[in-house]
Amino acid sequence: MSSAPRLFVVAVILIVVSKAYPCAWVNGYFYEVTQLRGKVVGARLGPLQYSRRLRQSFIRKKAKLSLYEYRWPIQAGDLIPLVKSTKTDDRGRFDFGTLSPGHYTLTIDDAERGSSDRFDVEITSMSSDTKSVTVDISPSFPDCKGGHEFVVK
Image (cartoon, rainbow, N blue to C red; front, side, top):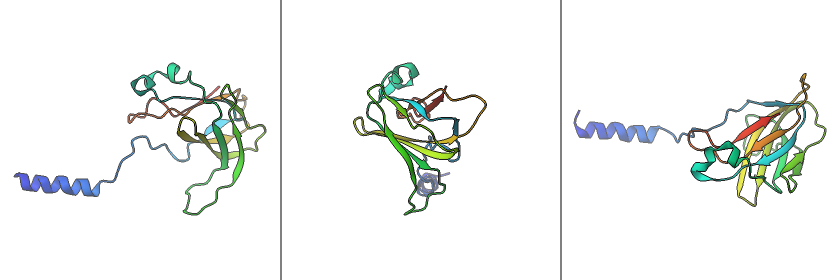
């Protein structure tokens, strides 16, 4: 194949292929918990971010957590009802108190460190109670590692 047809094929592929996000999180995957309280952690550490213990040693003070009714798909102009919101304390801890069973979207915004994240959660009555959750809002690398974790205890 001469260089002109190869160049044409490469150009067509580049035009047709849309931008890919390797860490696009699955819609409709819910973290099941009986209550929503715990702590928010995380940091931007470059290559050191692969160390879970290190990045989760950074607490996120005064991060704003908002809990919304789950809606998918979201249409332009949709108003998603806010259920509750809270902020983390000086130890990175939060507690939403009593919540009705159902599906929710939890958003975390930390204006101080300029980061945010989103998780879908389901409040349910399981056989074992959720003691706490650790929400890691560290950004993830293109291989989907190094952050964005919701750990249930």
